[in-house]
Length: 131
View 1 (spheres, rainbow, N blue to C red):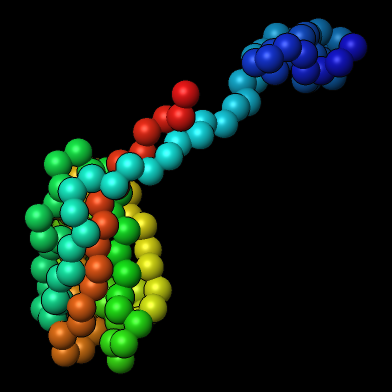
View 2 (cartoon, helix red, strand yellow):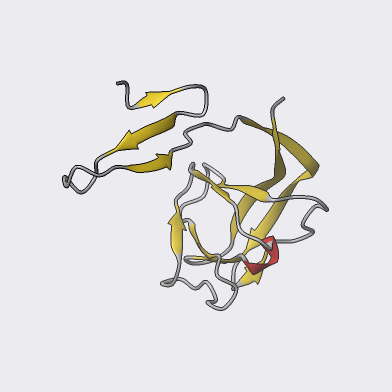
């Protein structure tokens, strides 16, 4: 007997315990394809001390943040809504790198320059399930 059959990968009866009995179970395996939709307009934000993301676009579920390649230092960010980003606290984004953040709500994101003032680029997105 094939363990898996059908579109939803439904399993038949299987002896898991090794005692001659059997147990039925269903294992669903699948993938969801989603495509990004840009919401709002692209923004530049100068960051020095800890701040939130400016003007979060309505309907946005993700923020794509990059640090300009010409910068000499990067930024740090936190996304838990209770920890404030600082020069030493948070995840680092170096010049020329980008990170896509998905946190609900996006207003929980805090950003801070590692030193001086750093220009970041932000694009807001939402992901729609492809039909």
